[in-house]
Amino acid sequence: MRVEKRIGRILTKHNWTLSTAESCSGGYLANKITDVAGSSNYFSNGYITYSNESKFQNLDVPIISLEEFGVYSSKTAELMAEGVRKKTNTTFGIATTGIAPPGDPSSALPTGTTFIGLATAKSIKHYKFIIRNNSRRRFKKKVVNNSLRMLLALIQEYENDS
Image (cartoon, rainbow, N blue to C red; front, side):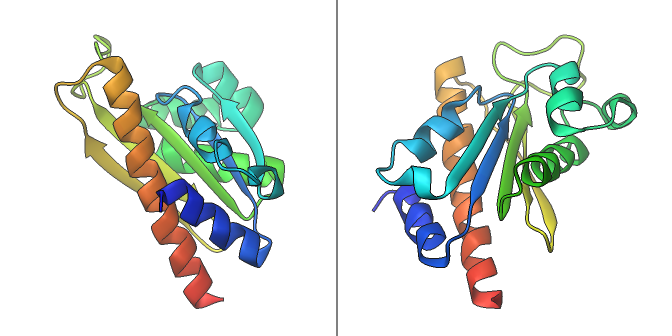
């Protein structure tokens, strides 16, 4: 069974909800989640917050944090995930930010560096990974697949703690 379908079953079972905030995945994460029939029962909102201004306006990510930690950082991923969770009043918030191919010459981080933020009312987590030597399309696919696996693990952990 596909990961996004497993996520949907658990969310539906517990009447939990989910929202997304995406930068480098450009809406592909929300697309994969909503490809599952019945996702309207648990999926609330999806924000594509590509610019810093959008992260600030839509997710309440402080501009000073973006300047201090950088848009490509674990802190930004966490703030995005927590911001979308709070803004939409959902059980879970997930966020992606990173450097998609062909890269960002203004960043010291290598192309493919990606951060995923996950938030619940009880915790905020982040993950960092580097996806190398990919096209932009394959990069997004890998970011989303990694995000879904991490989200499933968090939801299962949350389920076991409940």
